[in-house]
Length: 357
Image (cartoon, rainbow, N blue to C red):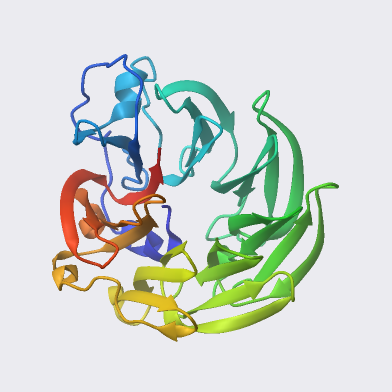
């Protein structure tokens, strides 16, 4: 996505060689409406890929980064952690390769490569990008504070760093402040449980406050509110940045999308006692109450490893990815706003993030 909840399972997978997905011939036409899929791949295998589904032709272009950048012999990179579209540029955060790939969104041609140690997630404000980084932390030496790196989007150069908590992951901008969840994943079982707040004008951390252990990401819920998502199978939390309050929500999830005040969540979690894929959930939360599963036609039984959820901004269609055990090609399922399956496509290994173009 990128997901430490699955890190332990991925360590058990023998990863070797580059991805063997066929690379389509180069295509010089610009892309239209559709969506990108960042396929995380297997850790250490350097087989992350980028796919694009074209609405006009109703077709999938697999491995589009390699097709449009044939001289990049290492491909997109290892372990795609985050993907974001901003001002006509697509940013792929490659954790395993230690870099951020910046491509022109209409052509998917590489524009810049920004090296960072253990980069995780990305957010934007004005003319800058902000990327969380674990820095030197490893699982046998996790007592290094992480950082947020500030990148000038005009030059694609690093112009600042701000130290935060242990192993920072997701981040979100609210007004003139940047909220960063500190996971502490490398100092388990003494996980970090705090959110850092950075003043963007001075690019300094102004405070930390406790939310929950081992936080995974922050999702903008509008009106100054953020949904905090832990890595483990615990409930979600709502942060009201205007009131400085934290409320525990009665739903779980490892991936969350918010649309019109409703929270769509799904997840597979790692349970140290029982192993991988211990819990699967699909939830819809709105108006202060759980509305049940957002999949209403029973087709969720066909999904092996629900990995990411996204809402199409215009149609409100619900997109769900299936990582299918992380060893074979995954799937993307499109549901109507009412939760009924419309269509499905096969994509790359471990589809972790969908971005609409």
